[in-house]
Every structure is written in structure tokens, then in C-alpha cells.
Length: 294
Ligand code: ADP
Image (cartoon, rainbow, N blue to C red; front, side, top):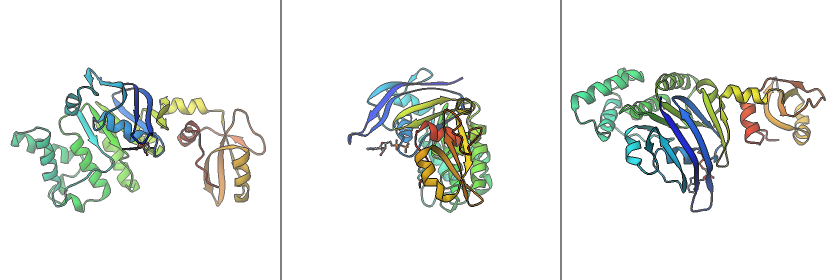
């Protein structure tokens, strides 16, 4: 069992933005979802854990590796899929992975060939191995990204906003791959997409304005909120009024009319009915804003 322990991590950029404010999290093997709106500080945290930038204070340990003070040791057991995985223009999937394996120190050509074949097979791209990565779809590129992140048997895999730009079937295939990979190592999935976390993650944290505002299981978050979410279908003209009067946490159009969910300690009456919360409700209630624009 691997254990990542992050304690009181803080980072303020030179422009004064406090991107990480006393962040503490403990993460074990499995898929961990780090959910937060754009600007929450997710990438700052991921980049710090990937040893690409330094923190001002705090500590982070993966097992007995002191990540902040011994970045070289961490890099040996890290797989990282950044937000934008830059790929070389005219290079095949096979060549790309071979090149990455050399960079990761696998010098024996035979061993490298075996590894590359294994990875191509694992991400279901073996048949396309002679094709230029440039010609690949978004989903296929992300699978190449995962394959390179798996080189060197990492204990910690970080994927930053991996499903942006994928169509639903590509996203599904990518989810399945991550879920399989995540069984024996720590996978941190940073995302602003609630579905990514719902589908995949056994544990999660919600981040907002540089702080962790929730950590636990998705189910616990739902149970905590149960009893405080109420729904109502309203007319479109009523939306503005309702937004002023209630704390709306979600708004979906159903048959041309807004179906709103509001957060309230007690039943607000006025046609509202209690409803079991969704993970989206959790997200918007934790970050304390509404996703409703009127
Ligand atoms: P997220 O990944 O959740 O969108 P980021 O970690 O990218 O959040 O950003 C957190 C905050 O820090 C934002 O306000 C962002 O504008 C700011 N920020 C990120 N990187 C830098 C940087 N290199 N210099 C200054 N500000 C930054």
C-alpha cells in the first residue's frame, strides 16, 4: 500500500495570488479525485507534487520519499500526464514511447521493445503503433499520454484535467483504462468535471480558492448533504426571483423549463420537494457558489 501525505502546503505566486493555502491531504492506493473550479489551485498542487514547482512551506511525502527535498527520488516513481501533453510532430506512437523510455533510463533495447509493446497493447493502440501520433484523435493521444506515464512502474500517477476535449465514447474508454491502472498505485485525477469523479473515484477532495473544502468518499459527501437539497420546476421568468430568494445549487432545463436544486437547512415550502443530492450539488454547495447564471 502506498501512502501520500501532504501537510500544510502553501504557495503564493510572485503576483500575490495564494494558489495553495495550508493544503493537507492523505491519499492511498486507488483513484483519488481532486475536484475544483478553474483557478482553485489544482494544477498548482499537481505541479508541486510532480516536482515541477516549489512550495513556500509545508511537506509532502510519498511513503518515505520527501518530495519537496528529494525531487529526484520522487521522479523515479512518478507518472505524470500534464494538462497539455505535448507530442512531437512526425513520430509514431511506438517511436514516441521508445523515446520516453530512453529518457526514463531504460537503456536495454530488448527490454524497451518489450515494454513499449506491452504498453501499446495495454492502452489498446498496438495496431496503430506505426501511425503518427499527430494524426490521432484526442482520446488516442490521451491514451498515449497514459502509456508514457506508466513507464518505469510508477507508484504515483498524476493526471491533470485528462478528459477535456474527449467525446463520450473516448472518455469512457479512458475511464476504463485509468480504473484498471489505479488498482495498485495512487492515481490523482484533477478535474473540474464532476462526472469524472463520480464514475471513477473512491475518494475525493474538493478544492476552492487554494483550500481543501472537503475530503472523503463521494458517498459520504452525498449523505452529509442529504436532507438539505430541495427541487422545483419553475417557469423561466421565475429564475431571477428564485436566485435572489434561495441558494440555488444547480439548474437543469427539463422540457424547456428550469429544474432547480436549492440548498436549505429546512424545507422552504413554496412548491419545493426534498431530493437526494447529486455530486454536482455537493460540488456547488462546497464551493459556495451557484452554477446558475441569470
Ligand atoms: P486550477 O488548476 O484549479 O485551475 P491553478 O493552480 O492553475 O488552478 O491556479 C490557481 C490560481 O493561481 C489562479 O488564480 C491562477 O490564476 C494562479 N496562477 C497559476 N499559475 C500561476 C503563475 N505561474 N503565476 C501567477 N499566478 C498563477
